[in-house]
Amino acid sequence: MAFVEYLVEYCEKHHITAYELSKKSGVSMTYCYRLLNKKMTNPSIRIIQLIAIALDINYAEFIKDIRV
Image 1 (tube, rainbow, N blue to C red):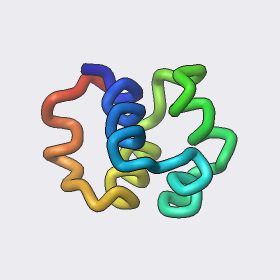
Image 2: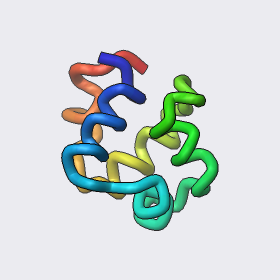
Image 3: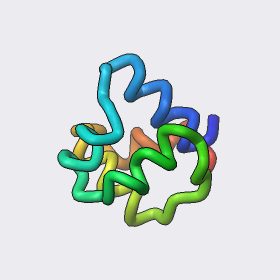
Image 4: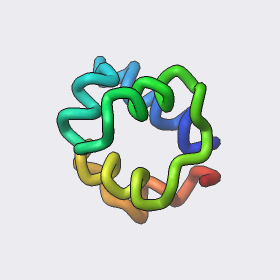
């Protein structure tokens, strides 16, 4: 599963909006919106780390089963 697909699924399951993801992670609202709407599909490792921390997910577990 690709990172963006995983993120979209996770946010839908936990009712997290782009705005909430942005506030929690420090990643811009526009960037989060583009990720959740699959308009951006190749985020940097740093963005993935920020999002993993914001969602309180172990980074190693977060990327274990996804393709970056």
